[in-house]
Length: 71
Image (cartoon, rainbow, N blue to C red; front, side, top):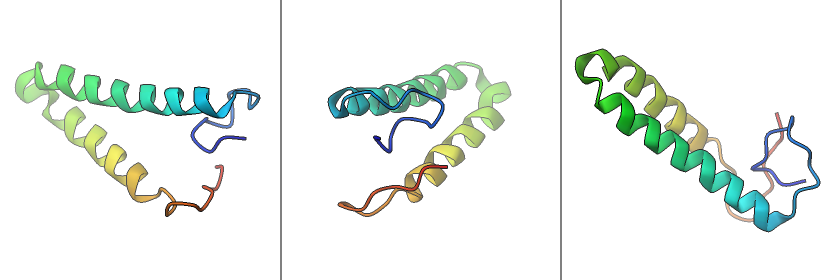
């Protein structure tokens, strides 16, 4: 099973597809940050929270060559 696919998604997805899914999650988060910027001061807290989650998630990634734990 690929470590980038959340546990609730069927794990019979080929590794190449797993990479695309991971990239899609990242691109979606970046798009949401841009959307929240457009909300001005009202979007600041949401943007701040999303960036924190994004950074916390990245900090929890395993070192290269080590599998990630599935939560």
